[in-house]
Image (cartoon, rainbow, N blue to C red; front, side, top):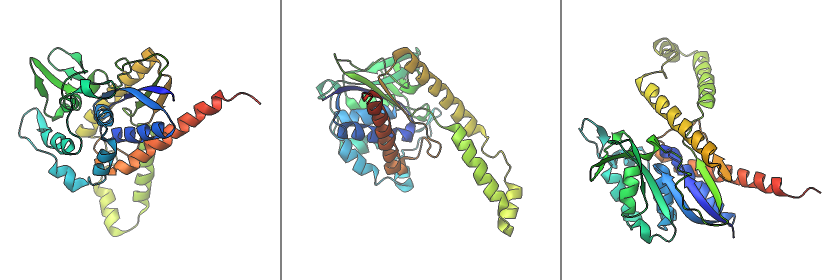
Length: 290
């Protein structure tokens, strides 16, 4: 059985793809011998290492827009919208907390110390404290204060921590990267939808076409969101160039965003299919010539 050192990137809800990646690797007979994760990758990787991935997947099937709102402990703070404690407590009811050093395989999660601008790597201590620090998306989740540090999302500095996973002799370094977003594909899809909207001849749609500007998707939120996404994606690509994983599962999506947690099964299926395609391609390329 081939051993894998697995690295899972950040990516918000797109990180649910990692569940499919893990499931496909296991079904193909690989053994995951260590994991490193960032943000959503830290959440999925940590839950797998703790043995709770199947239960977590079943729980995710129950998540809809209403439940997402119920799990959002909204805050009036000037530096965040959601406290982030309610969601962690809900997951801990499914997957009990454990110290990282007691997990059956080596695991680490990366975060960022906002005060000194340094990467923080969790290899010991509470699993969910590490995950909570790693997913602390700036301005959305409240930062985690630990000692003199103010911890925010690890994706700020190292969204794809290929250099942090524990390696063993003979293992295969596999990285699953969903930190990018297929903006070109999204743009082409939007053009098709806009053209379809403008072809509609009903009175209501005619009025709507006059009210809706062509560049409605270009606003303060999308400007900030895309700018952040482009920077994170660039850091991921640089990490790949520096570390050279043996297998890179690079999945960019144009139909799913960072908050599409109610679409878990579709995202998991994408992870499975993409991983299967890559493994088949590798297997075919290694077959001896006839």
